[in-house]
Length: 262
Length: 311
Image (cartoon, rainbow over all chains, first blue to last red; front, side, top):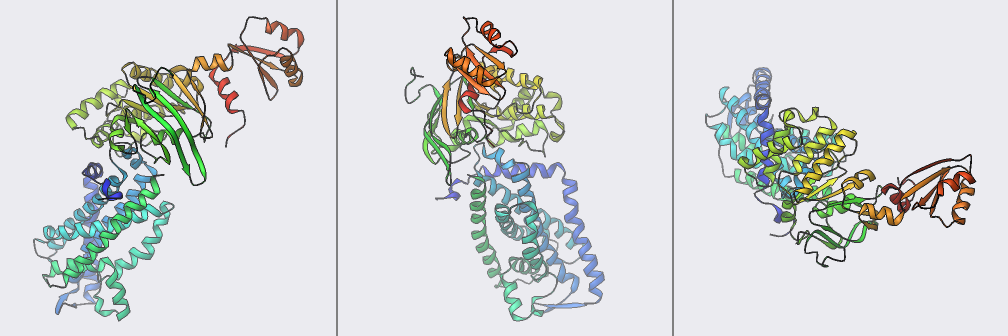
């Protein structure tokens, strides 16, 4: 391998381990929001909105609104955990704490620092998805194995969202500027990815746009998981997530290199 | 340094035609130097002289535009990892990890060097003791004083048992006690065979602990050598400051062929003693305020780099 990717080795796991150690210092506090948030969503949508919308057509079946939303909550947990870790979390480490500078004065390369942080963002997506999976199962909206089966989906999607956030960390002029990608990209994606309502209700053009958003494909996968509706088309969802990761991860490494190595 | 081979067999760092450009700005302009192993070497120079940039190139923190650097015979551009494994870096700014205690900071830092925990933990405790931080081992890093943070950064830079220790402004903003304590530790490290490279604005610091210094300005080397010798060669033994009519005192100095420098409100005369300069000045300028003091590295520095502000 040539180029910046050649500088990535197993040392990125030291960086991942640093983030993990910090997280575990306060794991009780860190576990709480991913557990509480889905409860709020499920209660609000299940017993609140769910009384207005009794059932939703999905993949030729009629499911309760709460059962439809539950995998959407799983998908947005993956998005938020991975994205915010490598947006605000990584930016703070890079800019305010100068943790990146301290690490790259050791045999660890900047490419490995970025990789370790992105892997940690993906790990946070996995932790969040497992915790939300437990809640969803407890509510009776998913099969018992969901918290385990969601791990590969969350790992892939989390890696993608963490890489996406890391790209912004490489270019934002200051920490407040994260409001732009959040307002222009994350919030619309959060709503228009088949998370809270089926995309079939949208006009054609909007469905096409939604089809480009990675969260749409994550929601397809988590919904297939919780509703047990597996079909060959899901391979397209997986390929789209892999393809975007293959672009965004190297791009994030490049952008951080451009920002920090001068 | 004529007694050393051009390849620098016993040199810790050898730089040849070292250049760093940022766009049109030439930060380091083709400089050469050798840092002998086991010595304490100082980089001096006004702000923007290129000190920090040069130091960053030595520890592979900034790419070299042209020229080359060898650290213990290793080409920095070709083997950055191997070079970084031999170096301990204590940067100017506080980049301690605020999420960890002092002890954890050291142990986690050692991990980046691939040191196993069984080695790192006792070493961290030893270094905390060496820098008198044992009592603070489990405190919140953010609650440490400036001096304690500097000592902790120094401890961290020693975790990999470096052969070359690089310190960027090691005592900036510290009280005299904390400064002297760091100097004592640096002397102890040098005695144990560690090569030390530091940048500083404090001439006293350079005079106190550096065996050799290099003065940079505008990305070029102005002078290098042993601090005491530089003072003797460039200034002399004493400096006599005469506060009074600058023009007349300057004329007095010129008449007697005395090296001198005019500054606002006063003239500095460089003297090697011997003749009764003070008596002559007092006789000629009875109203002037006259002080005679030993020449310092600061006199050399100001003579070389001028008195104008740089920023």
